[in-house]
Image (tube, rainbow, N blue to C red; front, side):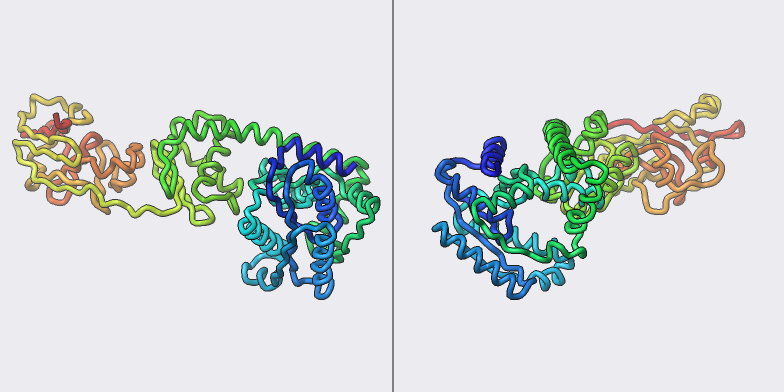
Length: 464
């Protein structure tokens, strides 16, 4: 049963290629020694080479040392090469500020990767079972997860393969007994301080009271969700390539107009792929982070979102940038020119020409002052010379038709002026007061009235 299911799983997920070198992680427990025994039986048929590895966690004193010697002895009996090592997991957990379970897992995987590199192995085989899969699924459900988390433990991930991932633990125990394998017993598997043990020994048995087949149902759910997830991920990867504008060493830039046309579910996956491309993983990136980004895609104001792991998201009018570095704000487009009356001046920074003319008051209708790129102001109100300049911090004026003063920054926001364009808007000034925000509004103070004796026309035109 175990052998046949293992072969079926290996073939279904194409876990091995002929001539593959494979290290096998063996703890000494039933799952890992069953995996080693089955792979050793199949190595000729699969045309693979095996190398046994074991990491002593130093958590169980002489029992842990006994596990190490047991694995060495098992490998010798099978005439397989073996590499063992030890790590002080308790010390590492304190150093990394994580729990013992996570520290042990991280240390094991680092060890496996090192041995795989040292031996030139293409695969790392681990003994995770169907029970491990549903326990992981339940743990992620309890902590909160997205669709990727609901897929459980992947049968194949990079070098890692899990040939027993569809085999139940009860069948493995029967298999070990049938081939006279005596696994080591890890009593920490029964300690309730570990979440996995509480799920395994308390939650799953309680759920079986409601449905005796709950484990089989959960495994079917994992397989269905996994199938759907990979289909959606495939669509998301296509969409990511469609909306990608630029890809640099430390970031990616996406086209917002194309992005927002996608289905919301796909948008979330595209954003995750963008973060993954920059960060290398999605560790600590939660649903709330993705939702926060999506929620800000429609805003006109430039937004910045800081993500875990030193990742920055910058949302602008035309694009969204995911970057591993916070860009230094570039210098503002600063300019300041004397504007003769009458006369003209070229503002190359803004690619505009500003000109002035003196007109008789009767030649201008009062409503003329509201044209966007032509302003009419009362010459007698002007206290001195006119200047054309770029915006400055603290600028404020009284926009025509609005009572009181308004900060220029707030005015730009209300008028939906993109932030990257604000430094290029010519500000017409006299006596340190704003007369006209070119293309938008004059100051209430300088409007023409029936009493106006002389009018200055100010016109903004693009340079030819």
